[in-house]
Image 1: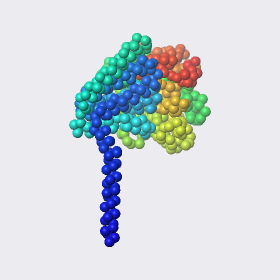
Image 2: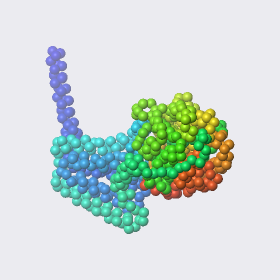
Image 3: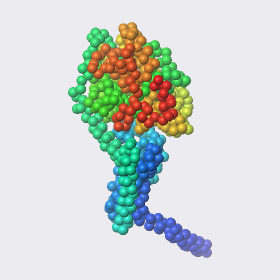
Image 4: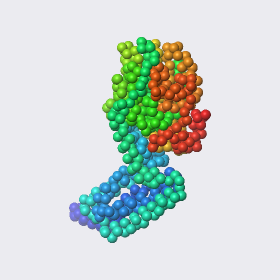
Length: 589
């Protein structure tokens, strides 16, 4: 009896559920299936999705009406025509993958920096940035990546499925798309011609996406090719260096390349926090509070610091060699120690010119060494008296994000400092960890000074960071560096020089000139090379006396910024906002 009742209830329940499921299929499942089988929607979805960066750039780049109109209508018309070119719409979606990659990259860039098209330097950063640093940044781009995935991954999957099912787009609709595409493209072409006629600064290649991105990619490939062929291109280059100091006088010089060190966060520059407790008490240290980098990118700034190249001649850097070669020609034994990974940039090629090359970090995925782990290597090199004259170039890990990973636990002086995600709300923690990394650099440089001081020889340590960094410093909520348009925080970096007591005693006029010049504006990219050469008593046609910080005739060169097209722009023309200009103006006086 009970079994019979249960059976009836189960049967009725099944009928009810089945009826409801059939209704659900009728109201929802079948329309959805019809939607995805209809290739018209896919053919329209992708062109619309690809226009997202065009619309955004028309706003962020403050394009004039005609330029913005051309930037929207012409690409949209071309996308419509392309999507109608093949009746198998799924196949056309896959052929449009390069456009989706450009668009996705552009959306991430706009999320990260708030403006600017994909620059040449952005493409180069992809192949020169360490894997570990890139991985650290990905967690802070999740929202932008989610937008890209929602816009383009469904279209790709949809296209692959439709291609497998051999679904096609009706010829009548394809003809309609061609007609409308021609209308939009034609209107965009008229806007281009009108923009050229009425706007003196308009350039179709620079102001139209993705044409500008493709042009920048081609230029990036050209530059990367030059970088890869550096050894062959620069093989005949000579500094014609000659030593002027007595051959039997011991000399040791160190050049330390810093990483992402903001000048404004150094206690030596007047920062209110004690970020330089040890250097502040070191005799012979001279800090340059008005030091401005000529680039906010590592792959440009560091090679300029390591050679006589600067913003004005950077286009020819592939044909130059580094300061290591200049010192070797003068009889110095040279060493290059890097706490960064090899990255196929000019920095690596320049470092390979040394007699001894050491990389502390060589295996991606392993815990990265701290900068202090270079100290034992330096002690060993300095203790070797078989070479009376030495140059040691060190490329430090510095203060790159994640800042907490740049120093050991005992240097957690400012707390809390455990922020691993970057957001304006976590700025206090980010600044704490960043300032702790500066304190660690302070200790690292002090240790190097102590090593050299103990040798009691003529010597000097020159330190310059490649650039600074944004850390949500104002209402723009900018973060990191290497943006196509720089900020005050990205180009105001830290530079200092320490002279040994023996050098000061032998050349008091150099020490006096250094102290006087510390109050002046400097560009480390222009001044580090001639300063090191003059300290070591090395003559060369490439040494410009007026740029040396130990010369009584030092004269600040006009401040410039090396832009994405390798043009040395005055700071007034490089994209600084009025707020940036206000902050940097005291450094320029």
